[in-house]
Length: 337
Image (cartoon, rainbow, N blue to C red; front, top):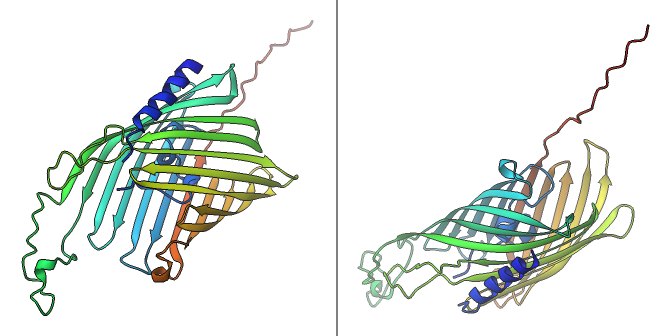
């Protein structure tokens, strides 16, 4: 099994060597599992999981950039132990060009227990699907539309775009590790490679313009410090082409109630993103629901224009746990005369 894991890591590393537009991503990376790593499909405690994420940013600078994601996944699919599967839908709208990215992917995963211990597991996953990208020139302005004294929208742009839409297939893969010491002490990490096939994304039929591969990784460690408080330090990195992102920070979890039917916990966190922003998070657990709210504070050179304002992000996760009644063996008492 370890040989397969090593081969998988080498496979991801080799394909990432020629990393060269960025993919959809969220500040609350840990609350969007199928965007984070394909190996996280079905990798949770429960039977079915549903997740939704929404992000709105740069409203103080330009037309807001809005990103929406919705996913659903299942554990032990088709009755196969340690197998997971899921689907994810992403929609992203950015800027004056109304540049829209729509993605639909399916994912599958399988876990390998280390030394036969189900609490110590490595999972491999793969994800594939269809991506569609469209844009509009209606709100864009070009030099050719300047008549010498003012802008005149009716003038031709003199730009030749072969299309305003493109659709392509894509492929992603990942590995994830999880060690559950107990319900409040959990170690997790993962490494993933996206856009393995480097699909063409040119609007000019230029086969040399490819979507760059993206490599990402994450790690977190949840541990208890008192009867009601857990600490969860986390880190995330991503590289795509010349772009690089690194997030480090953590959350504190305060357990409000552990009563069955009314389990509740509150979270507060703070993270920093390399040369870009910091963000604060507030989250809440209620039984099988988890809600998240975060706000980005711009720390980059764009802060003069944005007044430090970045983006707001919302997340919600619901995990369905099916009740299975315990089967008891009934013994027939003998009749005595």
